[in-house]
Amino acid sequence: MKKTVNQNIMPVSAKIDSDDRLSIGGVAIDTLVQEFGSPLWVICQETIEQAAHSLKAGLAHYPRSLPCYAGKAFLCTAMAKLVQEIGFGLDVVSDGELYTALTAGFDPSKIFFHGNNKSASELRYAIECGAKDKGRSGSSPRIIIDNFQDILRIDEIAQQLDTTVQVLVRIIPGIEIDTHEYIKTGHDASKFGIPLEQIDDAIQMIEDAPGLALIGLHAHIGSQAMDTQAYVDLVALMADLYRQYKEKYGKQMDHLDVGGGVGIAYIDSDQPINLTDWAKSIADAVIETFNNNQLALPELSIEPGRAIIGTAGITLYEIGNLKRLPQGTNYLSVDGGMADNPRPITYAAQYTCDIANRMSSRHSSKAEKWTVVGRYCESGDIIVQETSLEAYQGDTLCVFCTGAYNYSMSSNYNRTTKPACVLVKDGRAAVIIQRESLQDLVAHDRIPSWIATEAGKK
Ligand code: LLP
Image (cartoon, rainbow, N blue to C red; front, side, top):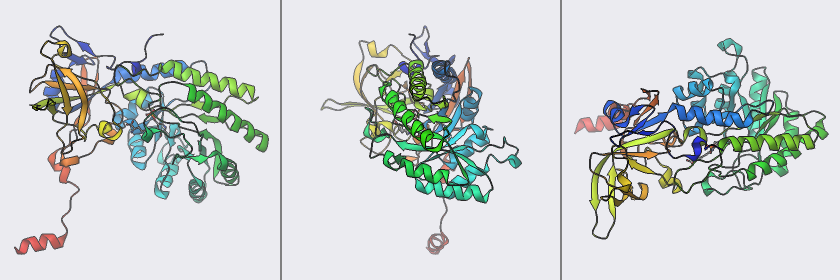
């Protein structure tokens, strides 16, 4: 089977011209840096579209599905618009993500609101945002119940607003995947969801709540999963819960959401599953297990984030200092680092990089071993541990697979400004997130009067 985008390290539109220079989306990297500055996040629209298409292809034989995009991986108004255009629903986990989506005109009825500690005001905002009087569809986002407090809060708000909220319950399935400890979420000790032992009580509470309509169950077992077996096991476990529910209540839950988490290749040795195969094996497992349990097929949602946006993004940096230490380490410093990509320091994540203006540099006889480091005041600010490159000051370093959890987890550490983000397609490039200015950095600062006064006295 043909590789899907998550199995490649470069975006689908990446090309190397006869001068050994990289282009993305038909735009030369030099042009991007000249026009938009450095560091720069660049997103290839075609890669996003192909990833979405591959997932849809895996669900094509399933009668009713609503694939969603997990906004936490990367969200801005342009991304929300694009997600709507490709026909996906959207997962949000905060009022900020919800506001971003609504600002872009996203249909609230295709939004799913998650979170393990949703505040009362966030819940009210989510429930109100679908109201007809706001000129929207009349359907609010579906809300994923994570805990017993959610049940009470959502029911109370729904009753106050004289509405019924469609909810799913997130379960802790007790299924573990082989990934970094911080991004496992399906194991027994997970902070997300309701343990299987308490599911009956939670469901009964929801059934008794006048403001809630239970439409299904949800689970998300973790992130950067490389195969499907855990998802197949998960579906079997969930089908059993749907059967038990039907036996007890004489009706069936009509929606099933098995989460996201499908992985991408960051380095050559990463071997993630084909996206179409991943979606297809989930759909097949649902068909088989629901049929075996004499259950009607529910509307099926999957909600990947990384696999949609990860490979689409690259980060461009200007190479600054090259430091060769007598003890043997060579440091190649760039003008960004852990503030625009906190994944290496957080999860020991590995990345692949190249010199965008000399793409064959790793094979050059002048190549040296470099540790690529950022500009931040932290020894752990390492982007790539060891890589072979022929590199010079002023070159453009490109780091691949930075679309997911880079911008969305970025910071202003050391009071640096966040880079711009540019979307490219078919020879066109447009800013979708503006570069921050120094003025932006102090825009929210306030000096208390007593400091101002004391300072004024001196
Ligand atoms: N659905 C739920 C309920 C989630 O919690 C997540 C991710 C997703 C979907 C999407 O997972 P994905 O397909 O992107 O793996 N910051 C970490 C990843 C944290 C993922 C949190 N939840 C990283 O940079 O690896």
